Length: 401
Image: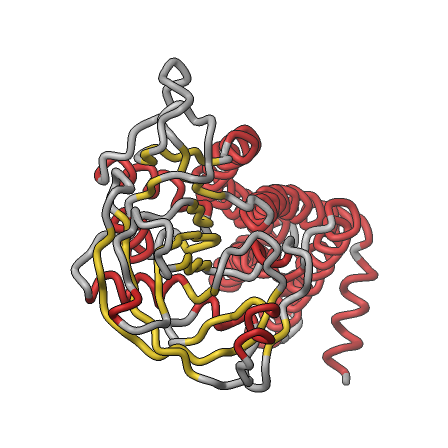
């Protein structure tokens, strides 16, 4: 308690020097906090841009005029997925199927054929626009579109006409159509569980997960040609890596001068113009600030060390007098060091609060640089006190006279 009172009297007794020390600490703290706050502001701005970028890879024809009814290379989609740089958003594909006997499978060109279209998607969105909402049976929901589960959705009308019940299994055989649409190729047979119904005014047939058709066609050693495909880029920082991968896959850039009737999709577009226009300047500024951070911190730390050292040196006569009156070195060091610590902490706390109120910088972002600054400030004060304690009392008093 006596130590605290002595510390308070010392701070109050040297009002001018106390004010100078507090102002120096506050000024250095504000400068460091503003710089750290600027770094944090640009970092948060870049994070917000990344979170709201919604970057998407869309497969189109060579002229970039069509994104549906295409021939997309599924092997390219798989390469993008396996890279981890992109995630499926919407794949749409179709093949032929029959739930009859092999004798009921005439040639594709025969108008009496009994094969039908089987559509596959990676999400529910395409069906959500179809009149008549999807009805999932117990145990199923929209997550089935992202699975490989052997399930299907049956048109409500077909469900009623055939007398199907929820959970019934349909024995089907897959077929793919050649590029010239003149022949069909039979694939594997499989049992599909009816997981729900939907409205089908266009007569599209059954709907199942894309991964299911991919697996079935792959096991049949046939080619799958999606008619529509788009992927999302979850981490915008991987944008350049994605573009490099697209080049490796020999995916070509859009050429507006080509025929608008082309259907093969070895071309993609990326909606990154807005993101690049705002993110690149922010990234450059952030990189510059981060590169300057060590220099700024070192300069502030050095100034803090010298300022605290010089401010404490101005108290050498007082320290000498206290020593001549019999005060111990340990007590003198404790009082003067605690005084410097109180003023430094007060200035740092005020600087942090002002920066938080003005710039909106979180206190956590200021914690580490302020701790470093406080450490150097106290280091300078401690060195000054130790040097003065080792200086002869008589020489200091004689010099002051």
